[in-house]
Amino acid sequence: MTTAHTIDLAVRRLLVAAGEAPSVLNTQPWRFKVGHGDVIELLADWDRWLPVSDPRGRSLHVSCGAALFNLRVASQAAGRRPAVRLLPTPQEAPDLLATVRFDARCASTAEAREMYGLIPYRRTNRTPFDERLIPAPVLSEMRTAASLEQVRLILLDRRSAADMLDYAAIAQDELARDDDYLAELAAWTTGQGVPAHVHGPQAVGDVDPVRDFGRRDGSMHFERHPQLAVLATGTDEPMDWLRAGQALQRVLLVAAKHGVSASFLNQPLDLRDMRRHRDPHHRRGHPQMIMRLGYGLVVPRAPRRPMTELLAEHS
Image 1 (cartoon, one colour):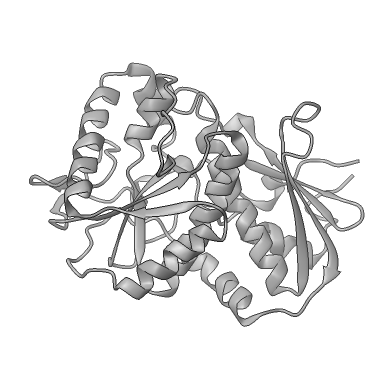
Image 2: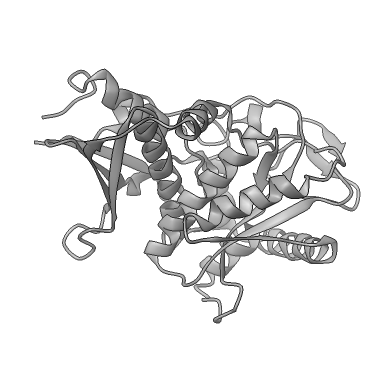
């Protein structure tokens, strides 16, 4: 049986890095099995699933994909090449989202070490950003990062961003009338998940580019023209969701390298999932994350699960 006390330091570092990933409402819905032969299994932790706002488990898979990417980066930084299989046995073991086998040693690259070093500094930033535009070369590097994971990062122009803010506001108003949704949101924003110290302020004025957690700790004006982007996949299945999560974290680490902050406006996607609607085929893909990007102040991080909770027992 593998426990937090019996795993070695190298594996512990991998799991700590994986556990730093972003997740929907900071649910951190993952667990890991450490097996023989240098294998780590990534499992869905359905006890931390949001059944009201995420009935398909899409956001859970995206979250776990982000943890998987951190696991990959940490292993590469340590000089181990990860061989990843997504959804290896979907019928027999639907909770098993990926296996990572560390078969070979490889040279630790400067890029992997840099990305690994950035993992603790990536934070979801729900405070106002300033009005600086993100330079074109940085945006290009972020698009390339998504494409490496077979995902598109679509940068919205000012008009499209304004339309997206309207969609988010409409979705927020509708979600605010759903008692089950509000109860689920409250359960994950009053202590566990997203505690008050990372909520950020209420938005005042015409622009509201942050999710409403019922904050009552002050209000501020946000940037007049939020810079928004959408992560989109070619199809809309669990494999795509895991790829979207890996792309998300790769993009966020590239952003962190350049001092770019991010938060999320996924209310339209939550409402779509709650209605069990499926997007029609679109040449630009199926949206999996709506991101707000910009330059903000340093913010505290949300709490992380302890190692003892991350490990699933393995005989």
